[in-house]
Every structure is written in structure tokens, then in C-alpha cells.
Length: 213
Image (cartoon, rainbow, N blue to C red; front, side, top):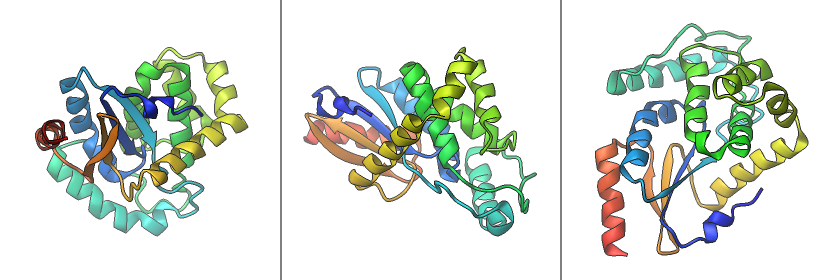
């Protein structure tokens, strides 16, 4: 996996998250607004790795997640389907969803954020099986990606390696939680957000970075 863009001097907005991270779902409209407000910035998504190879189920974590989901629903008015709360057959492994985004990025870099948000909706709204390749192939088709090519790439060791590379990069950047936003400005990296922020606040932080550095 090449991250040559990290060596570029042009301003870059780097979003670090996980499609199954609760507050990343809540943050989706905000990061979309920020991206649109900064057309001169390159935009990159790095998969952070929330619970890769996780084995806990919605029965194990349901009460904990339900608390967060209600808070997110209240703050953002985004739809959330609580149908899987308490489901002991639903395993929270976030690696396949992250890998799907990595593959989509490889096939068409322009769709990475929208694909990321589609994977979020598959979990939070549609309660899809997030360990099944069928879930992600269906999304790939919605984006006009060749289903056979997507499936082959999704199941490849290269895609697994590239996904782990994203996780490692997020860790090397010092990101401790999701969602996070890092700004590359004048060749330096600056943490603009660690956790949920509204777009207006985040844009002000980025403006301050631009003016002070």
C-alpha cells in the first residue's frame, strides 16, 4: 500500500475512522460538509481499526452500544435501527467493513468517503451482516463497481494486508480514537479533531491551523 501522498506539500484533509464506529456514523454529515467546504484540499480516508477480528457479539455489547446510539440519535437526528441489540449471533468484527472500503478506494479513489458512508448505513440502518462479502458486493454494485472484480479483491491477501496497513498508519499517526481528523499543512501534520465535532467548529480549527503555521 502506497501512502506517497503523505510526502506531498499540498494541503490534505485526512479522516481516520471505522465504518462501524458509533460516533463515526454520527460524524458522517459533518465530515461531508467539511470536505465540500475545502475543495482545494486533497481528501483521504484512513481506516483506523476499531474491533478488527472482534469476537464479541451484540449480546455482549448491546447495552453499551445502545447508550451511545441513543446519544448519537438525539444529537444528530440520524436514523438508527436497534433491531440487532442483544443479538448473540451478530459478531462485531470491523475488519471486513474496513477492507471493503480499502478495496473500493483501490477500484475508484473518488468514492471512498461515499462508500464508507454506505457501509455505515448497511450496519446502522439496514442491520446487514458485516462479516458477509454479500453485504459489500451489494454496495459495490450500487457504486458501479464490477462485482466479480470486487469479490476477488475483497477476498485477497493483498486487501487484508492493505487494510492492516491502514490500521498501522493510524496508530503511527498517534490517533487514539475515532473519528479523528488530521490536517496536512505546509508539510506538517496537525490533529484537528479527536472525537465528534460539528463542521463549523472543525472548519474554524482548520482555519486557525492555516493562519498560525
